[in-house]
Structures are given as C-alpha cells and as structure tokens.
Length: 151
Image (cartoon, rainbow, N blue to C red; front, side, top):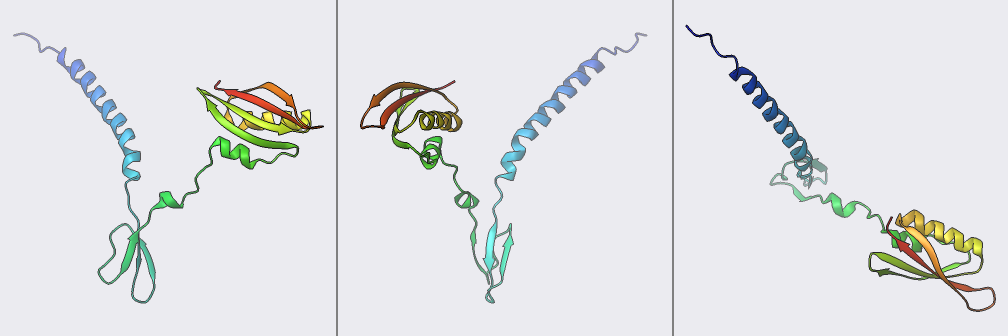
C-alpha cells in the first residue's frame, strides 16, 4: 500500500492564500465606489417637517435627491489663487500657457515686491519660477516676465 501524497495540500493552501489576497484587494478597491453611490433624499411632509433618508420619499411627502457635489466649494486653480493674492506694488497683467510651462507678466514697483510675487507664484503653482526679463516703464515702475516650469 502506497502512502498518501501530501504534495497536493501545500499547493491548495498556496492557491487559497492568493485567492483570499485577491479578494481582499478587490474589496478594498470596490468599497470606496460603493460608499460614493449612496443617495440622500430630503423629504417634506404636509406639515412642513423635513426628513432626510436613504430611501425615496413617501407618497405623502414632496422631496428631492440632494446633490452634495454642487454644494461643495470648488478649490480655485493656482492661477486664480495667484490673482486673488494681492501684493502691494504688484499688478498681474497675464498668466498664459507656454507649452508645458507658463508665462506670468506683471508690473512691480520694488524688488522686494517682485521677490514676494515670485514666492507666491512658486507656492501656488508648485513649479520652478524664473525671472526671464525686466523692462523699465515709467519712473519707478518695471514690467517683469517670469517663466514657470514643472519640477
């Protein structure tokens, strides 16, 4: 009588290990998608009482599905953030794309203001910022052109 082979047991355990690992990975990927698919209903009854629930409103209630995306404030892009950041002695004239880079044109009244503006550009864009040209306009006013390149 031949002894039973135990060779198949480790192979089965190895395969089951990878099946369980694959299911865990699949679950971790699909779980956020499932959470994002819930709907919330805002229901109002005849007395004006408001109720929030995850099922459609009853027949005696009026209601709507809440869209949370439209109520979330949009984060402005870095160009808008730069425009909103007012620096004394700086007037932003233009920010335009130049291939993968950007060109920022601005006027400034002091080197300190220009340096602060370059710091703001670097902070909000996350790019390298280099002053590429300076032109003297009126007395005390200069126009600068900075090139922003991805890091």
